[in-house]
Length: 87
Image (cartoon, rainbow, N blue to C red; front, side):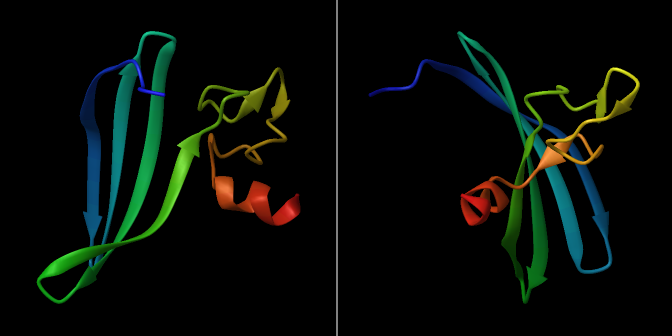
């Protein structure tokens, strides 16, 4: 089924010694989706070592009311592979 994607943008890049974090935003007709890529330097290129998604419960705030969000443990991001491992 084709996705109803309108566009994708790089929202933020933070680089430190040997690693980089890139946040992207993709716009769909149903809403925006943010992803956070963790990259590690590999010679002259980069390797994606982890991909997180913005928490859909707290919308990236890390808060559920006055308490930390239980889905993302208050971080605002979660690794979907952890969901697969706990299933």
